[in-house]
Length: 138
Image 1 (cartoon, rainbow, N blue to C red):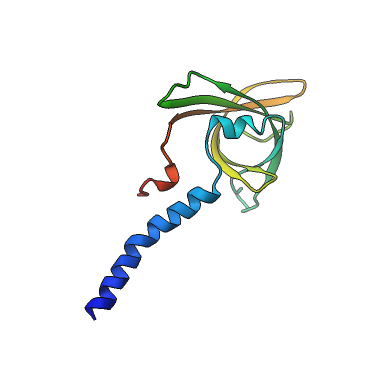
Image 2: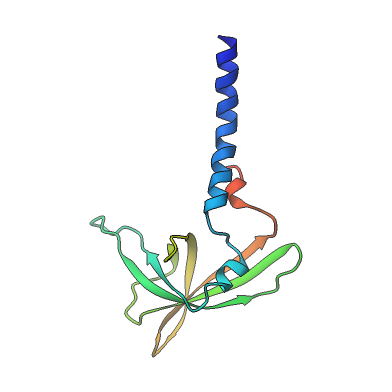
């Protein structure tokens, strides 16, 4: 009985670490380089479910990624997206999906508009070497 209990406890302690490591290997990085490599590409934005439970999507283009003072310990940058002029996007959290299946959760804020569309930004301030997928979840 003690042996099975030890095995079960070991498995319960190991499983969250294994799942976090798997997630870190498959999730795209939230990094300046990751987004810079995708400038000019089109993404889907997934909106929150509406009152009737219908989920909607929009296409957006990644227009620019601007370094805002990164250093050896910190990576600070802004991602700028362009949506259509009649976009329903507003200031909230969305899922951004690339055609390769990579997904990011971003807090978007409006950043103006012109004849080509409406613009939104996501601001990042990240510790280098910190992997949020390996952080303990509450």
